[in-house]
Length: 163
Image 1 (cartoon, helix red, strand yellow):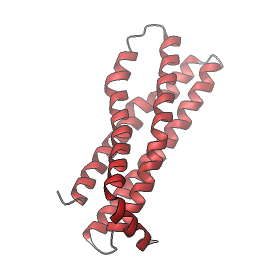
Image 2 (tube, one colour; image 1 turned 60 degrees about the vertical axis):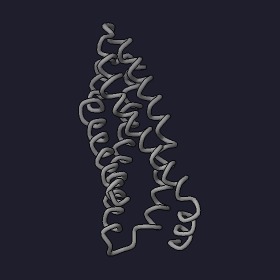
Image 3 (cartoon, helix red, strand yellow; image 1 turned 30 degrees about the vertical axis):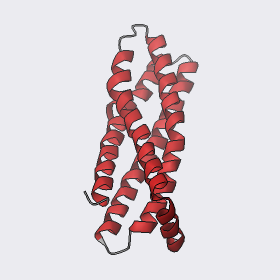
Image 4 (cartoon, helix red, strand yellow; image 1 turned 90 degrees about the vertical axis):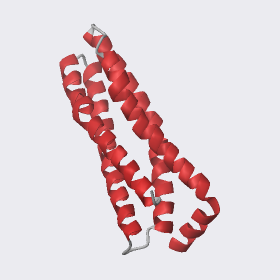
């Protein structure tokens, strides 16, 4: 498997790195845009039902948008990790650190999707307070955690490239 990844990376390094970075831009950039641009704007919608409905819709759209990019990051990261992450080297250690970060981010993403879907069920059943309460940790804790981890993973990736 490692030799296949080395050959693949050698032949297609530009495309693999490009897709990996594009995936990170969309995922991390989407979360930053959501948290610091969209979320504050939604707070100006005075009608609670309308605010929750728009929030659920926008968050669903973001989650659908980033899912293929998470898969792209996983696949390209796997190829790059196998190609450059020789066990017992500093690069190998950094690859494992990035893998751990992206794994935590992906698990957090899955929890956010489940939480958002639960909030939508509550909303559709007429429980606005329950829907709001279920969504609250996304904006206050889960999304900021993934933003921090995403920026950290980007920094580790830049260090891994030798900068």
